[in-house]
Image (cartoon, rainbow, N blue to C red; front, side, top):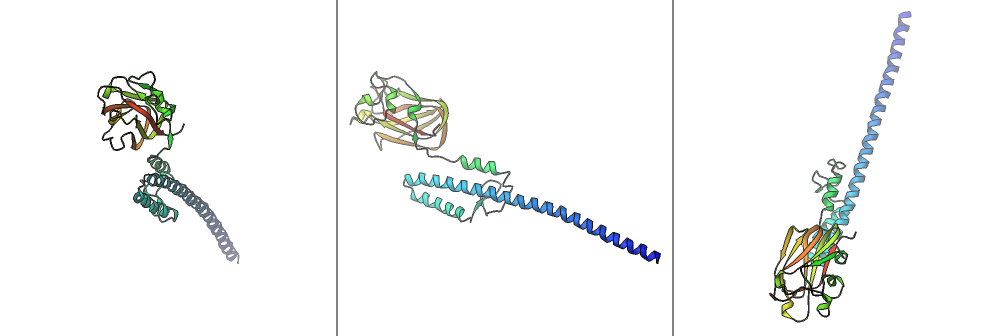
Length: 264
């Protein structure tokens, strides 16, 4: 009888110990289950932020193409916007490219990489910032200096713009900014006085006294030429050098110069 009681006590103790161990294990599992849920929620929140960011960027790009009259590209972008808005695609793989929504690949670790990639895309600025620059020229007549290229006047005589002295195709004008600034477009207005000598056919844009972009065949619009840059260029200075014009001996210049960049 005594032995039976001892065995019974051992069985009860073992069951209690087993229950405690099971309870302890369940507690650990619950702890990690909660962490897993929190992680999944964090993933979803991050992918949502990136999805909305991309939609905004695509819409901005679409407006740019619509202003240019390029409906084909605008319609292509609309398909991307629709897919993102309907959650048919997401930005989920290691390179920050399109993939299946919530097909997560270290999305939190790649968030900065994806945002950097998104933000590096071309931005078509709409603000003319030329009048914020300090302007110098190779030469100028006293009544038609460089500062007159940013007065907003595109009509009238030579006094409403810049005209160099007898330099011909060696003349240049430079715009210097206090701080480095990104730009997307430059528009040049030649002197429109029905004088063929005023027509400029080739210029060179020199960014920060180093990088150069040559613009040829400018006769299409004759007195107005828009130079759309393929990417945003960060500059502190922009020199516009006249390479070819119909005037190889006398003064040349611009009625107005517009530089489109980010607002500071």
